[in-house]
Every structure is written in C-alpha cells, then in structure tokens.
Image 1 (cartoon, one colour):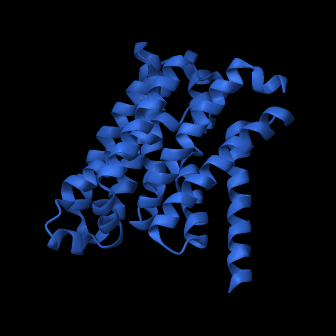
Image 2 (tube, one colour):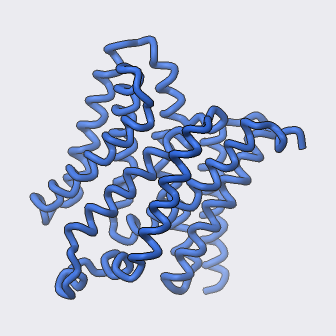
Image 3 (cartoon, helix red, strand yellow):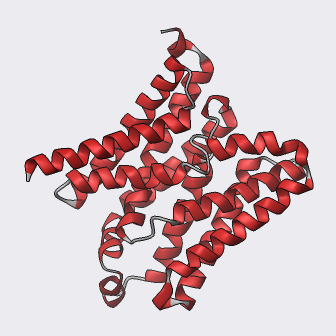
Length: 266
C-alpha cells in the first residue's frame, strides 16, 4: 500500500494508463494495414530527437515528437514513390533515424545516461509536464478516432475501396502517421524506444485472436493494454523490476494465453 501512496508511482500509473489507451488503439490500425514495423521506425527517429533535445537543452520529448512527425511524412512520401515496395519506406527512415541518433550520441557524451532512460523507459521519473503531454495526446487521438472511426475502419481493411469511394486516402494516411508519431513520442519515456513497438502490436495481436468484430477488437485492445500496463507496473514496483520490460513480458504472456484460449474454442 505504501507504493500506491507514493507520488512517483501515482504519476507512473496515470501516465501508463493513458498511454495504454492510445498506443494499442493506434497499433490496431497499423497491424490491420500491415504497418506494424512503423512503431520501431518512429521510435528510433524519436530517440534522435531526444538526443538533440539534450544537446541543445530543449525539452527532449518535444524535439523527439517533432522528429517523429517529420519522419511520418517522410514514410508516407516514400510509400507513394515505391508503391510496390512500401516496406522500403520504413527501412529507409529507420536507417536514417539510427544513423542520426548515433552521430548525436557522440557529440556530447555527458547526456548518454539520460538518453538511455528513453531507450529502455523511465516511467517512475514522469513529471507534471510529461503527464500533460501524454494527456493531451490521448485526448487528440481519442477525439480523432471517435469522429473518424468509419473512415479509419474502411481505410484499415481496404485502402483501394476507400479511394474509389471518394475518401482522401493520402490525407488519412498522413493523419494516421502523425497520430502514431505523437503516441510513440509520448510512449518512449514510459516503456522505452526499444520496447514501444510491443505496446503497439502485442495488444492488437491479442485482440485479433479473441475478437469477432472490429468494434469488439477496439474494446479488447484497450483492455489488454490497460491490464498489462497497470499490472506490469505493480509487479515491477513490488519486486523491483524494470517497468518497461515487465510490461512487455506480461503482454507476451497474455498473447500466449489468448492463442491458447482461441485454440481451445476451435
């Protein structure tokens, strides 16, 4: 009970609970569109932004967010250039992000330890500014998904049909990319850039294994994310484990349980 009354743990729970809504939700759309690896790409680009933020003494998450948004535009532009090889856009942007981050790391070695917390997550160090950023991004994502849920549904399952039906596919692709960039930038301090892809994809995998409809999948993906983050934080706090790693391993355990349950029902 002492853990629950600690301010740092309360901030961690709030931040984790918020990101457990948006990351799995955006991840579901990405998985359905076969863009699951975009999470890794944007997270690596975000780390380059975080490193630059430390270098120029500007709020690192804000710089990482800007880098991720710019990268999302780059991915969409390259996807249009290489229509038959769309995955090339993800590989190219990821390579550029890693290269830029490695250069920035060497410019000022003194901040390497701070950047490490963004690589593996440092949810217990969330401050008031971090919570405001996460809450704002959560609100934006939820409003967009609620208002455009029908269009996003059509785009996720059949982009060609959406285009024929008059949907401005290009702008919706950019919108999804920007929203994903926002979510990833907010997530890297919680679970870390190296693990954020798991928070995007594994809840979606659990949801798709158990759900029978798209609406059910949306509900399940959020539930899985919330259970994993909240339970993972509690386990990490009680047993003194790494929070990000604990959350991801718990997600994997939940995925295995979901697959086993589905096999039992067949």
